[in-house]
Length: 379
Ligand code: PLP
Image 1 (cartoon, rainbow, N blue to C red):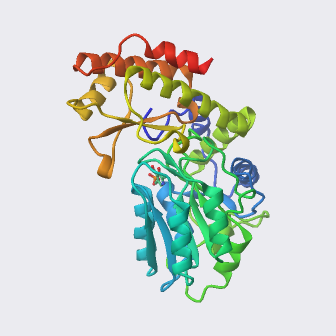
Image 2 (image 1 turned 180 degrees about the vertical axis):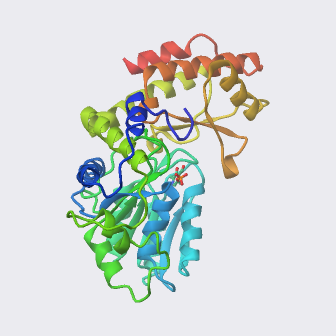
Image 3 (image 1 turned 90 degrees about the horizontal axis):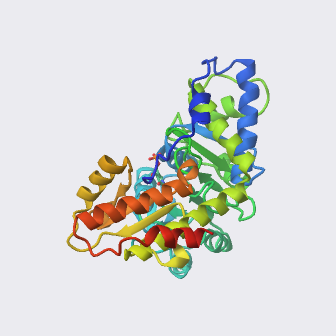
């Protein structure tokens, strides 16, 4: 129940153990088409340029920026946690100017601040933001931010590493230009793959670049030689065949459940966990309206050693939860309810674990009611 990787289901682990065939084998080529179709289902898009990049979420992030951003461009980057900061760093490494719109950690990106930045910087070509900030548990209003960007002739790059599969994400419905995700969060696959999708405006922007894409590996024109349509694929890099089997299986599981049902499941279990924490007397960092169901951030009570509690949960309950990052280090725990990990058994185990360990550590928690409150909310 950390902030990712989430638990990988046995069926996905079994899929990764299938025989390794060549990444240009005709059977594998057919399989790639199916994998792309399943990714389009998860992203809710018809974009033909939808595929998994071989690498973790950070490589998907970098792929979006290096293809769309040229030296000297202006990019508006929303920073309300660690991953917005990573976007800023990549923009600057592309030789572009990052105009940073900052919000406090734990809060959603403020659309008014974004609008002001778009007005003050008419030269900006791209707006980038994190839909679900895993470092703080805050969800931003993607649709509003995208509409603002388009009204000011900017394209959008959306980080959906933690959102995909866990909360509504509508790549076509919201008109997202470029989006990337990760295999290890709500898709519950093994880490190391980053699904991406590019819309037609983004493709136009890539085609009309004045400068070459500085990365060979992430240049989508070259990647498409392998992942593009048709049987005439050529070698680009040795694709991680077994990891792709796993991603395929996790997407089949998602489509069997139904993506809307998956969003619903995350929401229901989050409400139960939140009710349990509130009954214990613990505070959630993010306001109710901006809370991510798949990543619950809880304030460490005064006088309690954050890392000692995490270690005791791991030793006594075999339960992993995450530490705070950056300005929240030592002050919060980050508790994932992602994909296969998002179930009632985990919600109850988590509450029992915190209740037991915190009571033993001398925190003023209310003992004996959290599980009931969680079940009440769930039912
Ligand atoms: N963006 C967000 C919102 C994330 O949560 C993460 C990882 O946790 C990343 C990007 C980077 O993904 P990875 O660690 O797979 O490179």
